[in-house]
Length: 362
Ligand SMILES: *[C@@H]1O[C@H](CO)[C@@H](O)[C@H](O)[C@H]1NC(C)=O
Ligand SMILES: *[C@@H]1O[C@H](CO)[C@@H](O)[C@H](O)[C@H]1NC(C)=O
Image (cartoon, rainbow, N blue to C red):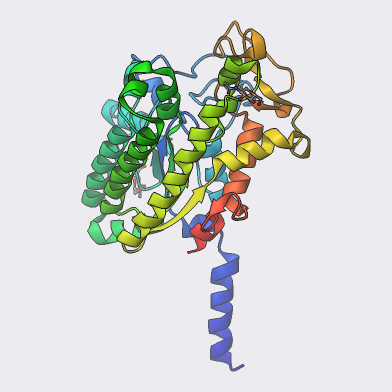
């Protein structure tokens, strides 16, 4: 090998192995619900879904609630860690700082989170929880950010930045919970019609992200929703079969939409995460992950600690590491960490057609 070739070789070598992932992914833009909300709902005055009181955040060093629906970190935090980036800041906190002029140098170039507890693909979940930021509005906010960034850095630099950024989308559970709780929705739509229209509406929002520069997507399906502590109360602590069935069906329709959407648009790369398979594996094989409690919530009241939300007066389990569920609906920090490990390096049983590591490298 001559000297020149050696240089090229070592450059390529350093570039592919020596550089951390942080330098290849400049930012993460997060869309979704309470599974990835890192504090937006704390800025919604009317919302009744807020994790701004104890025992939320009990396992942070200062034991303070942050708006995350967890005893500590949630999936959004672990995604940031995997990528060597700070967790994307809540959009409403950035806006409020900019308005108060605390920091008139707020930039969205480092990523932003639009995720909001209670959010759905449909706007209807907004009524159930008085206030949340439904997906359509999250994408409206993103469009504002896109315009702002265009003014800041220009179209070409922005397209380049966004094409390397990761767009995380974790949504759909609240729409399904809403359907099974509402006789009105059930009268209007068969479950098949409902999941089809969820996926159709999601596709419209994904297309808006694509039209504004998004190219790399990490998209999660829904989990075994019928096995949440709250749902188990309806079936003598066993999973609700119908809800699980339609969770699976929704994921199937979602997967085929993603495949079709990719064919329709140039340059889309995505990793689909099968939350259903991942959560089901935790529930079926708890011991291999260090869990001993798969049914009940850690924080709550009554049977399975699921008769009431996690409130200041609620019971708190002693060991959060051995519970899959933190409250009626949300995973513990321990479970979220496992999910993100699977997002990142999972085999095709969990991530399809590629995992997040491959998404980053692509
Ligand atoms: C404002 O942001 C720019 C670009 O990100 C940076 O170079 C500059 O140092 C920042 N200024 C302050 C006061 O933070
Ligand atoms: C309740 O759980 C049992 C055991 O898993 C299952 O066979 C049954 O279909 C469930 N009932 C409902 C209403 O989901």
